Image (cartoon, rainbow, N blue to C red; front, side, top):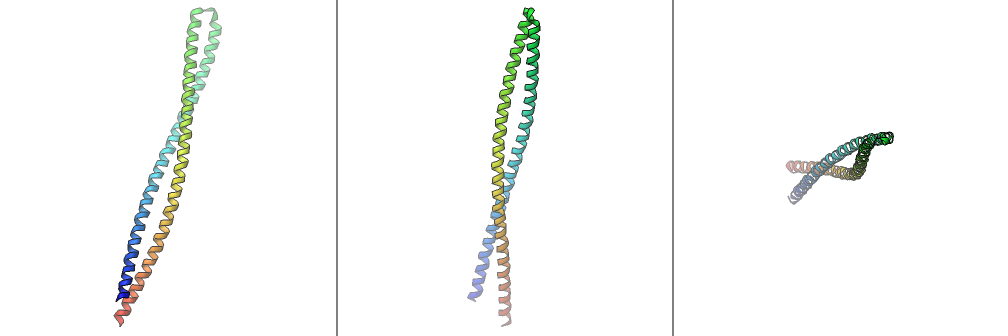
Length: 164
C-alpha cells in the first residue's frame, strides 16, 4: 500500500510541477506577445520618423532653392532699394526656415537612431524570451511524458493488485 501512496505522491508532485511549468510557459508567451507588440510599435515609429525625415529633407531642398532664387532676385533688384530690402527680409526668413528645418531634421534623425537602438534591444529581448519559452515547452513535454509513464505504471500496478 505504501508503494501505491508513493506513486500517488509522485503523480501529484509531477502534476503540480506540470501545472507550474504550464503557467510559466503561458506567462512567457504573454511577455513575448507584449514585446512583439512593442517592437511593432517601434517599427511603425521608425517608419513614421523616416517619412517625416524625407519630408523635412524635401522642405530643406525647397527652402534652399527659395534662398537661391531670393539671392538672385536680390542681386537683380539691387538698384531698387525697397525691393532689395523686401528680398533681403525674404532671404533672411528663408534662411531661418532652412535652419529650423535643418534642426528638425537633425532631431528627427536622432529620434530615428534612438528608436532603431530600442528596436534592436526589443528584438534581442524577444529572441531571449522565445528561447526561454522553447526551453519551458521542452520541459513541459518531458514532464507530460513522465506523467504519462507514471500513470501507466500506476494503472499496471493497480491491475496487478486487482489480479491478486
